[in-house]
Length: 276
Image 1 (tube, rainbow, N blue to C red):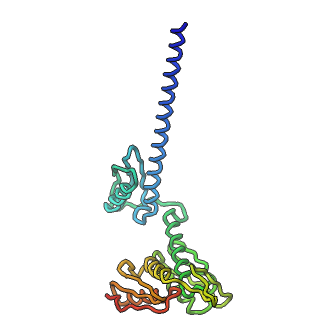
Image 2: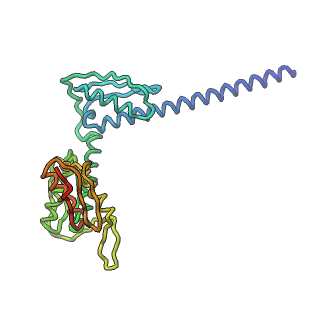
Image 3: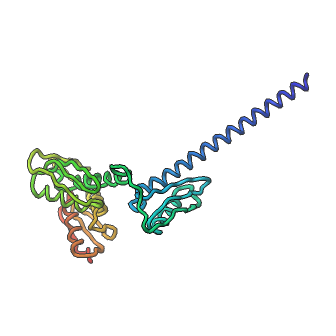
C-alpha cells in the first residue's frame, strides 16, 4: 500500500514536471514567433516606405535570426539595399538574399489608390508644409488647409495679402517631396493666427526666443529641396540670425537668407560668412 502511494506520488510529480516544461516550451515558442513576426513586419514596412523598393513584390520570412528575402527587382543595387535594410533590424543575424535581378522587371500592377508608402509620403509633405507656414512671419495672415496627393499640394483658405499668398506658394514649392502646388488661397477675409511657441509681453506683443528661431530656421532648411542645411550653421541673438558655412551657389545662398528672414521673430539676417 505504501509502495503504491509512493509510485502514485512519483507519477504525479513527473506528470506535473512534464506539463510545466511543456508549458515553458510553448511560451518560448510563442515569444519567438511573435519576435519573428515583428521582425518580418518591420522589414516589410521599411520596404513599403522606400521609393526604391515599394514597387517590387518582395517577400520576407524570418526564422532563428535569419531573414530570407524573395522576389524580383530591376537593379542589383536594390537587391543589396533590401539586404542592408534587413540586417539593420534588431535580432537579424543573417540574410539569405534570394531576390532575383531582372533588368526589364516591371512591378505588379496594384489596385487603384495610393500605396502605403505613398500615403506616408503625402502625410509627411503635408506636415512639413503646415509647419513651415506656421513658423513664418505671415502665419497671422493665413488660414490655410493643406492637402497632398502624389506630391501635389493644394492650398485652400485665406490670406490677408497677395504677398502672403505668394509666399505660401513659394515656401510650399521649396518643400522636400512637393512636385506641384495648386494655390487656391483667396486674398481677404478674416485673419487667422495659426499659433507658435510664444509668450506674451506686458504690452501684448508676441515674442519668440532666439533658441526657437534657430531651431525653426534649421528645420526650414531640413525640409527644403533647394537648400542643403547640413553645411549651414545658424545662430540667433536678439532676433538677429547669423548664417555661416558653405552652399553650392549664389542662388542657394539667396534662398537660404530669404527663408531665414521669413521665420517669425527674425529681425535681420547676417550672411557674410555664408560662402560658395
